[in-house]
Image (cartoon, rainbow, N blue to C red; front, side, top):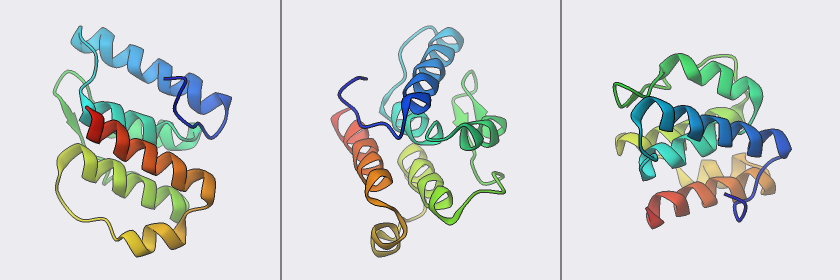
Length: 118
């Protein structure tokens, strides 16, 4: 966890708490879908609070389509998280590259690496 880039200390702590919550619910560590999703949706406290309603660890299901009130950048992050989790839909790389600041861009790339590396 420590080798990943984090937006801030809160992101690091919230991601750790989300991983712990997953482990408590499923009694094993999250797979690459869950790790990449949780890494992204814990980016900000608001995003995490908004996303939790669509996350069901025990049912192995995540639906982020109901998340509202997010910034354009947060919406792009949610799109990537949902795509990595389900493999459905598409992410426009040009829109992503143009719509994220450098710090969040690095976090999105790290999430792709989390998924890729398993």
